[in-house]
Image 1 (cartoon, rainbow, N blue to C red):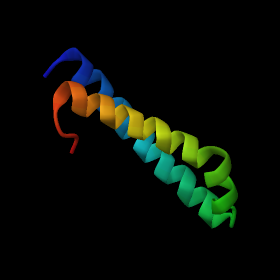
Image 2 (cartoon, rainbow, N blue to C red):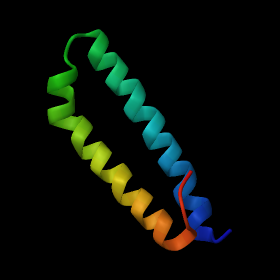
Image 3 (cartoon, rainbow, N blue to C red):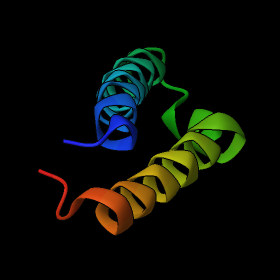
Length: 62
């Protein structure tokens, strides 16, 4: 596995876990829609970009 693959994978996992935790907390507070519009979408776009980079450099992301 290349250095890029080894570096991108843990970042993707951490971002995904953090995104889910933040979404759950926003939902619990009844502010999921506002959170998603303000922060959630940007984080999701970042995750999507990293997945594309990973797949370009390393193959399919699982």
